[in-house]
Length: 534
Image (spheres, helix red, strand yellow):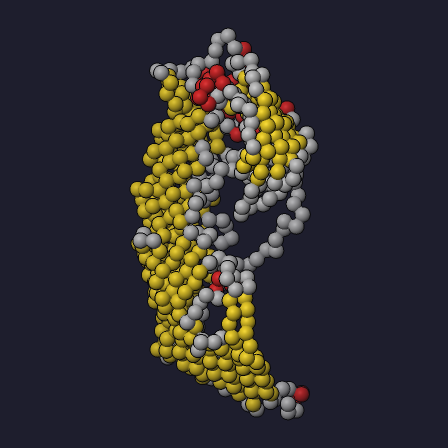
């Protein structure tokens, strides 16, 4: 070090070396071991001229060799240098990124640097070729992945590339100008497999343009969806926390992501289907999704339900008319316009679903016209209410009253909470039809002990069930009716989700060990989780 005015740093030298050795990664599916060595040397001379050299190797000729020189440390200082890199094996990526299970390809670069620190120029080429990646979360196998960056020494870099997935492909081209900090990318493709998992299968044909300027990313264009199959998991029995629940440690530090503005039209093709619990349909139409910070994404347009089924009270209704209406509101809360019917003999009973996705409204109708209790009886039981059954009429009228205050969700939720039950609802009789229909009531007496009782609506039968959780994975269950008794050991194997039954997102998939006595009529249903009663 040499003294200078105000003891400013005038001369400096630094050397860091990595002695030849081996590095072993054990977090991957198969352990990876690589030889490594390296050297970093930097020198600052009088006049603030900086010289640097980096050499790093990982065996087999793979590594990076970079030389950089600047005439000063200001933004206008001159820049020169050269960067060369070769990485012919990418199997290290899965150890560094859990989203990638397999990786292959080659990364090569040979770039000459010039210009100024504030506006560097590049001459040469760098890129990825022969890439292949497996993304298990999306069920994807990307092939022939290539990204190439070219520089002519006059400014920034120009990008080209592409990839194959399934039977389709995408191609990209763009440019980066470091002097103005602008970036542009155009993406086009046809029948590109964007997802192939158990819950979502999706092919897209994009035509998009992205531009980055002054810290804002702007995305415009269109995405055509020729094929999609959406199969969300059945979460109808998942109990959400009540409004007064406070989860300790659930708060996350707010991030400040890049501002994104977007206007993208999404058009559905002839083979877009939803196969969700209680709702199956084929969709057509298009919407325009727009995002303007700081607002959430909004949409305009309409999606038509070309054909489908809607399940209500355990019965499947044919959708005669269906539309999801987007009128500039949040994209996750479209308006609903659905008409679903069930035909029994000469009677057409149905429901009109309006409102929005977050606050649906349900109204009953029939041809010929009849009271709501009778319409509901046709929908639930498949026949007119019995004139001699006072209990049935009373239950149906309760259901009608619940429907009038906000929809089908109030039928069980409102009554159950008011009576203090964790489970309250109707259950159809399966093969026994209307005769086997029952009213189910259930309650957690302790966090580990659950009891329920099923009352026959048309036959003097009842079924009592008691379930006790021995461990997080093992429960004992006993049931008794007027005709038979039985018991089960239920072993729960949870994969890819929370194992705590108190967790709101927990869904137990029971596997029964042993057997039970034949039960002609099993009026039990999977109980909800503790806390469902509010």
